[in-house]
Length: 411
Image (cartoon, rainbow, N blue to C red):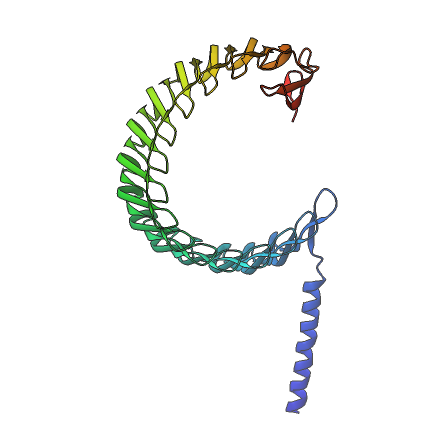
């Protein structure tokens, strides 16, 4: 009798379970749609609040997000997906807040990062990020969404890229950076999130690349810069980040490259530029608007190469160019940086080569063309900026033919 009673009771329980299950699952899920009729989301409501499993979809129909609701709040495991259907992120919700460990993935499926959230949905605990090749990229600690303690950053090859300490989310103390080959790249100190004191940077071969002091995150005082062969490349002074005073640059062979004065980061006054053989290559003047006044350039043998006026970096007025034997090569006028009017071109023996007409930087016509002995040559078909132009050497040998359209050379 006892067995029969228990059996009846069990059957009654199963019947009630079936009925209850049917009632719950017989409810049609709520569905919403995009304008094109594609399902955007589906799930259940109870007392106007989301409950049970919900799924959200991209416009292409692929699953975007899936998880559960309790009394309208996200709870339990949730997963999100890319438009291609690949898993993007997964983790737990509690009372609508992300909590505990969350993982995020690259499109390839490779783990991108692992983070920890506290009950206030703030990053809290060890943070790890990975390169797509699976190598560790970044590791450090958060406390209530703030970076603290030692942090390390790595190159894709696994070599350490950067190491240092955060205090309350700010850079603090000694920081070091490294090249992919493991050589030290930079070293210096931070105070209250700003670079301070002496900083050094290095080339991949270990040679010093620059050295100087910083204050409140800005370069201050004398800084020196070096080539990877150890030779000085540049030296000058900074004042609150802007370069000031006399600056010198050098070629890799140690010869002076340029020298002049800088004010608030801009070249001012006379500047000189040199070839790596020590010969003067160019000399002229700058103001706050750019290069101004008479500028002269020279060939490596010391002969004058060009002379003319500049206005705000642009050539203006008459300019003359010379061959390296000192003979006039060409002369004509510029207007706002563009060749204009008649230009005369000469061979190295000072014989007239061509007379050209320019208009607003466009090559319009050739009036005449001669070899080094004064014999006329076929100048080409250029008329009003359209046609061909023939180029010759001093002996009258054709070296090149170029085509122009509307005064511009066609490549």
